Image (cartoon, rainbow, N blue to C red; front, side):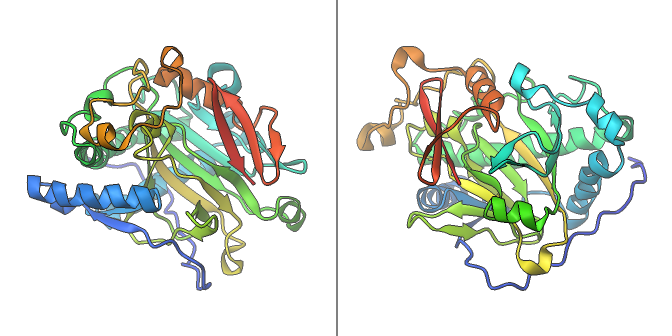
Length: 359
């Protein structure tokens, strides 16, 4: 198909800083075409989730040129739309519990009176669900194709591997994630902007507090600005290294609930990049995944693995929320609710579950 001409986005050079990187597993989806290959990959995923909660995916079906085009598109909502038009398409997170549209800068409180310098634009996999800025409208077919690619060629193979890891039928999780079902799975384009030295000092260089994602799976296209860190088992923060044309994957709250704690939601944060990348913005392309809205986030007790090792219950049985209830609670509260401070941890209770933010 003929694609509209848009400005080319140039990434920052990869940092030369000597950073303490996490040793993340690399999952090669080219091996997922056979039962034997999937069994081997499932073991890798299970181990990766137990050790770090993050892993890379390669051979996911997008060429470097296709990935480059997605980052060109990802920059359009920020550089191709006026500030006034952005406000017209701002999301109503606190009111609706939905991220659809813009999350404008300075919406969340980070620390010591400093608000975020992060902007994102969220597009439901059903791109017709709401109107979009004029500059994005010609690009919607490509964004739709990007959404379908992530769902069919990245998410579904990963969900199969996770089901195998729990000794469940391969389609168990896929059946909860219907592409055409009612839900909030969405593409997110996100841009962090450099901050002032005063803001960095007041927040101890933290751009986004340590947190868990609230969906099942997060798919992040690797980019070279080093800023993402994960909280390791030894309670230290490890950097996530950039790999060209790779995807970074982690589990969120909903997957932890469904798996009875077997696939834990991983704590991660975003901090100021190393010195040789201070002047660069950080552009991201994501696919944030949730089950269908009506799925109850109850542990899959039929799993032989969970029957052997036990289940970590997070809700009383009669108070288990649906995906819709959980995402709305987390979305409305994030960065806007009053938190209880306990040392470097800040806490809030959502749907009866203690949610922690690591500062």
